[in-house]
Image (cartoon, one colour):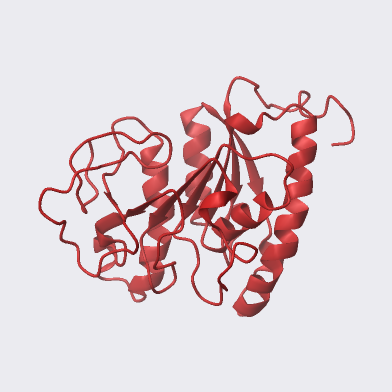
Length: 247
């Protein structure tokens, strides 16, 4: 990356949107579930994908160490992103997408940048051991647009509102596909990645209920509530629902 033409000498295409993809605890650059999202962006063809692999610093069984490590990882990542900007990466066409602890890495990274990212998409940002305060976790000040997808709020995922807009999928706490899973909470936590991978393709965007302060404790929508969004890239208008439904 020290050569001024490094970025242009790669397969990077200036006309495409840029995705910085950050996995969560116990992940890696080629592990599930983040590999599903990586492959979806690549298959779409409209994105340059930069995959951050911090797996060596976030391996089981020591979740405590992984939480401790997200701050230095974020600081290091910010240096890389600022170097990419000097090489031609446009901030207004760059999104940091993080799952679980990776969502907080996106937010903490932003604290070290000398510019603002266009967007952060936080996929069920991790709750356990995450302290309050914007220097310890993701918040709405970390990018021009911070969008959050909740799928296991209150257990593995944050229970309260975190971004400019927070989507509670199927109520935001437990996902219906996980009923037969031996760990329904972990399964629900992982599904945030799958929902975003689905939303990348036109015609397959799940529909979700925008949260107010917290994800609801049930999956009922108050009568008359409107405000459905295509989470991830554009906020549109339609009826709100808590089931994930293809358009």
